[in-house]
Length: 200
Image (tube, rainbow, N blue to C red):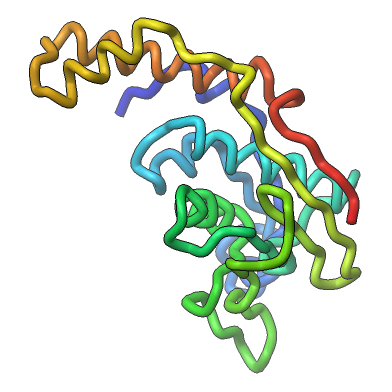
């Protein structure tokens, strides 16, 4: 399996997973998520997947500061419904990292380590997402806007050729290269400027 080299440049997200610790999955419950992990789960790399990843990174950093974030102890809310726009895609990435799910997640062991009912849609917020620590109630709103990172102008005509089944193998490859170049600019070169965090 070969992926773009910049995937290795993306900052990783380190967490503590109490459930994994109890079940002997990871030593001391320490688990590291990489961008490649969420790309494999999503099936592709795009501005939405990369945005969800760095939104989660910035939110956890703001909520936990120098502590390791605790997986299963983060509540996440969205303004949109789960089937509106890309909310579901973003939610899936955040679920992969934080463990938070709506009602489909793990129900827990004797009322401990539950992962369900930690993700909410159709909520009254104005941000891209709201993250909350379950233990302290501390919350942050996260705003993601990659519009300052413009796509290469050659991408649009190449996409039209592909949608019309007229693109050559070389043109398809060029489109993919240009697509990932934009993703790199978002998640590596501009990850501090495309996301804004505000304490609630």
